[in-house]
Image (tube, rainbow, N blue to C red; front, side, top):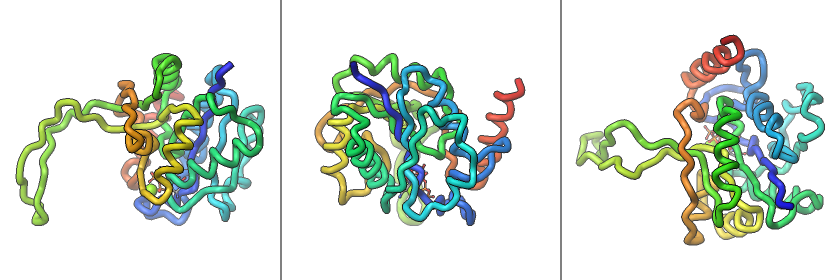
Length: 234
Ligand code: CTP
Ligand code: MG
């Protein structure tokens, strides 16, 4: 039977966050940011294991007690120089351990998207389980989009029809994802779907909402904390 695995690339340094501590460990509602993604993924009944891909020199992961997730959680110290490399290394290591079959689904989820909900995760899995290619959570663009020149002057307004903002999880079968990332290894794709697209496939967009945003800049941290606190104390 096809299984569902998740892989969290968490080997980034969070340079745009301007913090000493990599952003996945910054505190949100009294827990390191990555805790919230792990917690949501852990409680989905269909998910067998959660692979967390850490930087080889990560010395923060072991400072926390992850035992409540021990039945599913596997940390791999094989992160690479880019997100794509971290995902590729994580998949390769997990496969070498004999944990994944080629036809299994892999849900790749950024450690920096702590506000993913159980409902969004379920929707993604339900809508893609029988899909040929796989796909990703995404949100239709709602703002008016301007294209600028190098002096920050508007050259024209971009039509926003059919434009989406990509999120994670991104869900693809192991075999296709590894092929896509091996093909993309020297490239710097910022998500998994781009690597799949480079092979000529068309990932399916599953509509999500803006709450599943990526914590990138310091201002994003306060917003994520508000959302999580409100959910935990409605
Ligand atoms: N990531 C990773 N390995 C890398 C770079 C990024 O595993 N070499 C992970 C991050 O830890 C994060 C996710 O990919 O969970 C999304 O990346 P991003 O938001 O860009 O995080 P950082 O690369 O850490 O941040 P920045 O780009 O600001 O340095
Ligand atoms: Mg980055």
